[in-house]
Amino acid sequence: MTMMPAIAPGPVAGHSPLVARSYRSQPRPRLLGFWLLIVAALVFAIVVVGGITRLTESGLSITQWDPILGAIPPLSAAQWQRAFDGYKAIPQYHAFNSGMTLEGFKHIFFWEYLHRLLARAIGAVLAIVLLVFWWKKWIPKGFGWRTFLILCLGGLQGAIGWWMVASGLEVRTEVSHFRLAIHLLAAMLIYAVLIWTALDLFALDRNVRNVRLKLWPFVAILMLAAQLMLGAFTAGLRAGYAFASWPKMGEQWFPSGGWTPGKALSFNLASNPIVVQFEHRWWAWAVAIAVFLLALASWRARRPGRAVVLMALVAAQIALGVETLLSGVDLDLAVTHQATAALLLAAMIWAAHGVGAQQPGARRSRR
Image 1 (cartoon, rainbow, N blue to C red):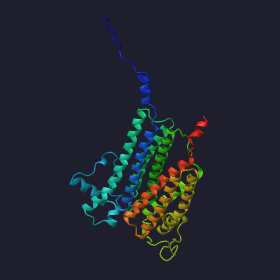
Image 2 (image 1 turned 180 degrees about the horizontal axis):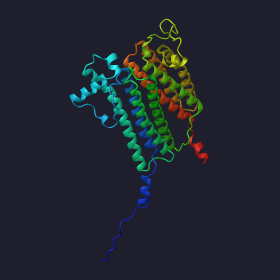
Image 3 (image 1 turned 120 degrees about the vertical axis):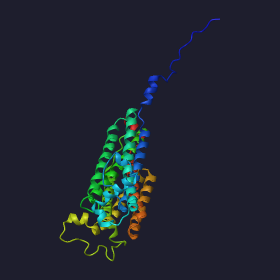
Image 4 (image 1 turned 135 degrees about the vertical axis):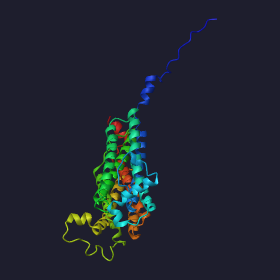
C-alpha cells in the first residue's frame, strides 16, 4: 500500500497571513466614531457636574492642583483636616463659610473632586483610545491630526480649569466669571469637535466625504455659544438671583437704576449682574430664531428627525430657563437647564452636519 506524502498545511485561499494582517490594520472609522461619542458623553457628564459644582459653591474646596496624586482623595482624618485647613486659608471661607464643619466641607469637596476625577477619566480614555487606534493603524487617513488636536484641547482645558480656580484663592471670594466662561466654552468646543468628528467618521464609513459646515449653521452655533457665555456670566455673577420674575424684571422690562452710571459700557454689558441677566433672558429668543432656521434647513435637506429634535430642545431650554428664574435658581432646575444647553449644542452639530453632508451617490459620480 502506497503511503501518500504528508502535505504541510498552507494558507487557505483568500486568507493568507499577509491578507489577514492587512485586514487587521484597516482603518475603522465607525469604531473610532463610536469611541469619540463615548468621550463626548463623558464631557457632557462633566459639564453637568461642573454646573452642580458652581451652584453649590464647591469649586474652591480643593486648593491644590496635582494632576497625578490629586486623583487620590483624603483617606485619613489627618488628610481631611489638612485639606480643610487649605480651604480655611482662602477668602471664600472667611466671607461665607466661617462656621462650616468638617462634614460640611466634605460635601462640597465631593463635587469638586468628582469634577476633577471626571476630567482625568476623559483624558485617560481619550489617550488610551487614540494610542490603541494609532498602534493598530485603525485611524483613517486625514483624521490623525484631528484626534491629536482633540487630545491637546483636553490638556489645555485642564490648565484653564486650574487658571479659573486660582482666580478665587487669594483675593476674590469666587472665581472670575470671565475665566468661568472660558472654561465652559472650552469644554463645549471639545464636546462639539468630538461630535462633529464622530459624525464625519460615520459618514466616511458610508463613503460620504468632505462634509462642510455651511455658513448659516455656523452662525447659529456661534449665537448659541454667545448664549452659553452669557449663562456662565449669569452663574459667575450670581445674576440669576437678581430678579425672580418673568417676562418683566420686577415691575419693569428693564429696572430703573439697573445700568451703572459712570462705568464703561464693557463693564455694564459683562459685569453688571442686572444687565447680564437681561441679556441672557432676551438673547435666548435670538438663539431660538436661529435654531428654527437651522431646523428648517434640516427639514429641507430631508432630515426631519433632526429638525424635530432641535425644536423640542430649544422649547424645553427656554421653558427651563424661565422656571429656573421663577424658582429663585432651584438647583435641580438650574442643572437641568445647563444639561439641556449641552444637548441643544449636540443637536445643532448633528443638524449642521446633516445639512452639510453630500449624498453618497453624488460623491461616487464625481470619482
